[in-house]
View 1 (cartoon, rainbow, N blue to C red):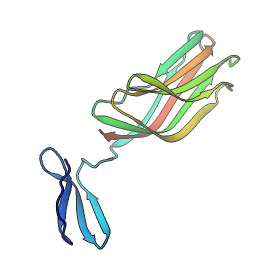
View 2 (view 1 turned 180 degrees about the vertical axis):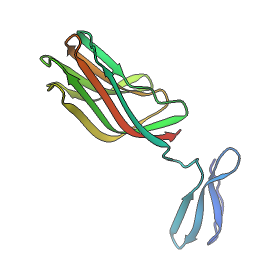
View 3 (view 1 turned 90 degrees about the vertical axis):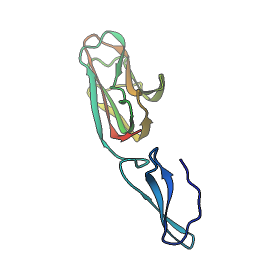
View 4 (view 1 turned 60 degrees about the vertical axis):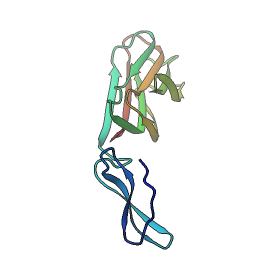
Length: 160
């Protein structure tokens, strides 16, 4: 809820309140054209809650195409991924790796690795925001029976 109102110097005026009326963001004084904004409580707009670190693997791939899904973002949470890494170990002739995010049920490709070296991680850094139910995905094409594939993500979790 946005609250509009007049502001006098050194008076705390709520700008954003939660459902109970508790201020989340207030003006912390106004000096000329400079406004200081202060956030409070656990309801910060972008609050850090905990680290996300997840490795998902398949150590006995089927021959051909395989998909490895990371865990889904829990209800009421948001993940900001900062690193996405994929690896294949085994016979690499004809193998291709596809890294993606599944957002609202649709896979969105992040990057492909079409020439693969066994045991080498391929990674990307950035900031990818995932909502509840979204997940990371690795697709392996051209796998050899019983070879291995790994999907590793890191980042942080926030309240939605």
